[in-house]
Length: 528
Image (cartoon, rainbow, N blue to C red; front, side, top):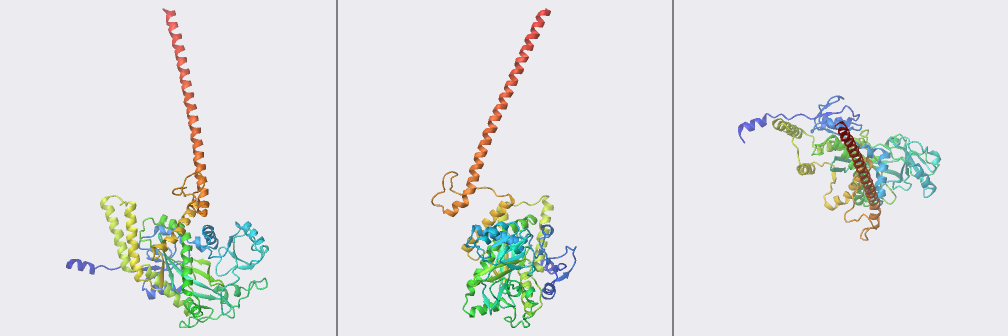
């Protein structure tokens, strides 16, 4: 390297990282950005001079479409498909109809008013003795939730999410509890999912008793929400970060350790939880991908959005995890040393894992500048083939893999999986979710399954459940072809009829012309 090149590199001044915190109420976000990462903070709603925009609200596709390649925002457009209780219920119910065993990790759910009739039939039959938990579809922190055994207390015309209540939860010290598990979605095309190895365990403050009309109103016994239980006189706050196993809000790891000492299989539990997370996100991936790629079609790094989700998981009496709900803006309130420790580390590890730094910002800006120079010199945009684009995406993903492996912090990468057979297992869920999305948007193309005839009964080698799946599309194809055939015949007959009419008209014109010619010839003879 020449002295001039070395001198030129020395003159390069790396740009600073700017974080816009106008739309967040959480001090821990500001603390991590300014005190730990040493970034510049701004709080300007109209400014676009930033590298990270942290908001407590959702993000619209319009915002993403205006962002530059080096900018990042902490939400994906369209994540409401999982964050709203009614949308989550719809997504998982559709998936469970196709995969009943693989998607039995959430309670039976009805969305009112659309599922009112199904709910009535359930309560008349199998569910006549069941307890229901009723939640406003857009509520949070336990607001508006109540228990009931009768539909008389539910307005079936209002928008509620109704679920079968888990009446036999796993208890610790006689208390009901759940886990708040933090999940980082670092990309959606393809999915990149990380689970944080530390989280929260939130306990109810009243000893649990099976649900009965006499205790339906005791929310501090039935609900584990911190916002509800912290006001109970029994609530014990954690005041020492060195003792994360004390209080009604504890670290997830401390509870895992307690359960492990009691002989519980924590490794299997952790594996089950990771499967729940991956399957749930697979159900939403096509929708998230559509929202993302429509706004940013030329982002091969797949890294302009990231999102920390809060998965709320409860255990039933058989030690099986059950998904309760997903929060797309989990609380980052830090009113205890435990909260400050876990959430500050979570946010720092997230921003580091997303490769937000001065060197990367400089590289991306230079890369964009070089692309613009090529356009100016050639006078046209550079178009890539599908194969070239695929190769570039794979190259960037390899770069991300290498960086992330070195900067995981407290995260564990759970998707894409390390083993190819594991990734193949989840592909079936992604494929079916794509079918659901295409059907809902009217973009699905009807295709025949391979090696299948249109007419006749299904081949014996095909399983009965597969026959059910393909039967309807096959009938559609057959009916469509028959209808098209009838239309073609009708058009052919009509065309022939029109041609015959035209021929007859021309023949009549010729006859008239012949008669006129004969009359003219006779007049000429008479004159002569």
